[in-house]
Image (cartoon, rainbow, N blue to C red):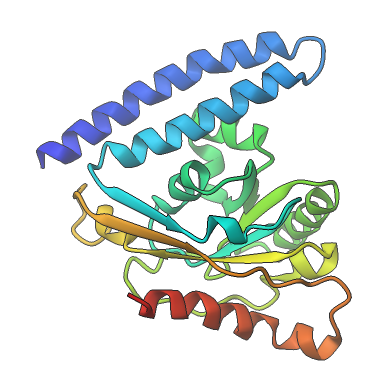
Length: 238
């Protein structure tokens, strides 16, 4: 319980610090989005993400960083916990935006930074809005941005994986960027397993990229199952 209290106090303080960093970002951007402004964006979000994980007292092992190809990619990950975004943001190289649930758009401070990262907010109950977000994601990938998607659509809160949503990999297929499968193992134990912050161990495994440029229709039809199996195998390997 004490660790949970400490974490939430640290979270609150971090939001105040991030709020102050917003003003610096705004000041540097008065004459357009500058390199210094992007530096503030990258450093603030990366350090915040690492800090939030560190305050749980947990250890994080990242395996397979060398498998990430140069250029922009679509990271495709399983989704166990609310900590998955900080884990990928803070511990996996490449500045990246996320396709996140619409509820995060209403969180003060955090949503502001996420928008600056070119994150997209998806309402799965609104098909028209979901399609619009997917098209925006395709445009961002084509423009050279790296994105992250959680095809399960919601947290599993456990070691098990949920079913991938149909069309969840259209972002990669339509933009032609490589898919980099990622397995997050153990993040649910940081909070969701017992509804309090607990010291734990998380393993993040980065797998070989799956290239989507010029794939056939038959290959596209099997893409979701292929990526699912790669990520699931990462949960089985100890």
